Image 1: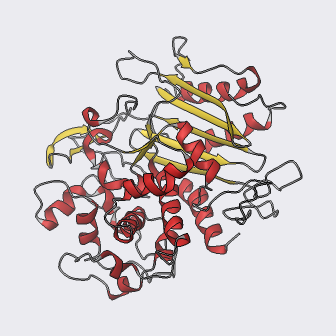
Image 2: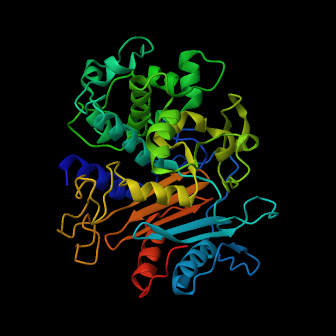
Image 3: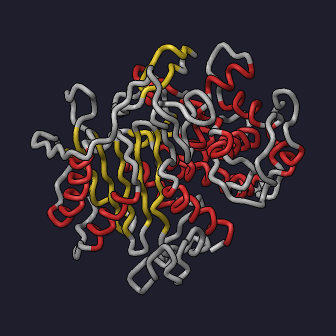
Length: 442
């Protein structure tokens, strides 16, 4: 596997999870970077008098009335058990699970309630915010442009974007940032030192004298006017902002397409995936099939730029539309599994054993038969090894996806964030390992 891809995969599968905050709020809904700062921060601040928060509960709910939708598959009951136990132990109200085997979907299940009032069950095709799993789609969009010869990974980003930094360029080294630097989280930004700019709407609105919450373009103008924390390429630090810039690179190269329209038209439609959408901040603006987000944290209302109005962080603490390529997509488990059948979670086209398309079967592999963070390939496994688990997390959202070397892909989506992302990944891995016979596809 390509060394750069391998490092990027390890970062997203390991370091990000270790930060316990692929996205996270501090205890008071703010963070060290300023009002409402959150994702990928490693520090927290003390709660203030205006904060309304709840702590994560360890008390099991074991709700006998919890609805479960989708076809029950006796052979796969251990997966249902793992999901239900995980949700009950953490009082998670809504979840969905999708599993495929050798590229064919064998299980789609919804668990719990799609709405806060418990009036409707979560259906198997329910939509959830997928948070940082969105980055896999961005990787695939960039890969598409590179394969088409419209973009090179060693191209410098600044000339492509034509963004005028607020107050002038904040650091001459910004001009040296390449597409590859952004893909590998080596652009020069360290949000643990500055706060994540994708979650600092009030600070940026104040700095740019905005009357509305900043979008991704305004965020870029602000950040590019600030100094870097390290020389591009000399360190690897997880960066949501870097992936926001990648989406804007896609838009610049594919003009007049937006990031999402390019993703749909040139990445998803060719593989018949049609259920990936842009996240909407306000509940009234979301699709009917999208679940509610159970978020105990409270933030100042970023949609109105009203610091006195405390709202659920998931419903107005940030402008989720600005996240698009960094973490702002909404999808069903089926859409994710269909995407994962065609692409590795690191963005490279995926080719299964026996496919004659001519693509490199090792593209995207985290394994290469060395057993590192994967399963050693044998005659009855995929030649390309495994990728994952990858995680995503935002206020009110937690997601996990894994492409296993034995032909099993799994996606789990939840409407409440929990602090240890590895737990459910391990539970599902153990359940899959205990399955001796796989049912035929639907």
